[in-house]
Length: 433
Ligand code: DLL
Image 1: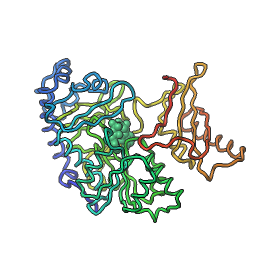
Image 2: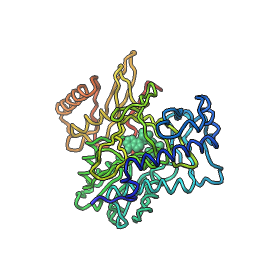
Image 3: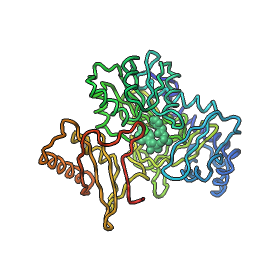
Image 4: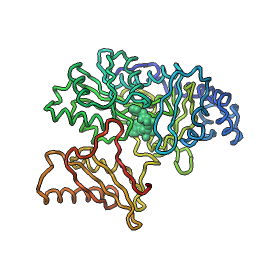
């Protein structure tokens, strides 16, 4: 039977969810107008006052916020409460420029922990579970977020943080960890290392994994589930909105429920900013309606995905988002063709390769080059050059039919691509350097 952390919220009627959103949005806009001069100026520039926002139907009138705004307002410019009311910051590295610094009141942390608790319960967690949190702790939100959620559920929490894989495995085995929380690339690495030690899925006490913070494909999910003998659940979030737990997967494992009592989601056309209808693919935009310290209105995530309100078999009524299919700013344009790293990953996994690869893009004689370095499994590794060349050709063909582009494929020895204990570095774009 499906269990919920907060059943009255997670299975509330659509009317109830809309009523919460309407009321909280109006209150939040007033809070931001009164306390954040930066945002007030942006509203004034559009000729808006809080009176113009009476319900979620008026949301589209508000200006967007982007990472650039966060940079300009760094560090305190978007803070909406006195500093004495804040108890924590978390931070994330931007691709360029200043780090993002997000602030929390104690109330903000409590709500964030609840969002993560919902994810853990959706993955089958109860107070009988032993939950190992192998996301990084510190400024990164992964460790603190899942740690807080695990406490709320009442799991025995093992705060290993990331790294030291031998010790991770020792704790999983010795303390009988049943839930593992980390990035999917680290989960794959832990699984690979356990396999090398001769541990079979039935010897591993884990039953579920809560993996997010980076893109991962269905094929990678399948591999991790097989190696560790678990069910692997996706979790999504971003520092600007709190951290992990903005949305999470349920037993249906087909998209992530957005915690709509805290976040209003919209999909927009990334080029024009126009709001797109349900079912359309575009950039995800969030408005946080319960955050006190760092409320963001219409924040552009750059993540590309689709929303659906189709009834979910788990009983939750909150809207679902697909796995982000890429980022509008991470999309590579190679010889004029849009390429998402996830497409390349899908081809590799479909051909039986592990998700250990690196994509190197360069420009030689004014032409873009795409070099995909792929690690072989120990079983594939061979001295037979003919065999290696056959495999390479097969992948070049697979990539051509997925991308419509010719890539160079280099097969490399097992374990020769550096492993990540946090988010994996998949793309090296030398054109920008
Ligand atoms: O990655 C928060 C998090 C921690 C989520 C642990 C899940 C688990 P940031 O470092 O600010 O926060 O990065 C946010 O990571 O805009 C997405 O592009 C990407 N991302 C997060 N979760 C997923 C996911 C955390 N499940 C950025 N699938 C977001 C794909 C994800 N991409």
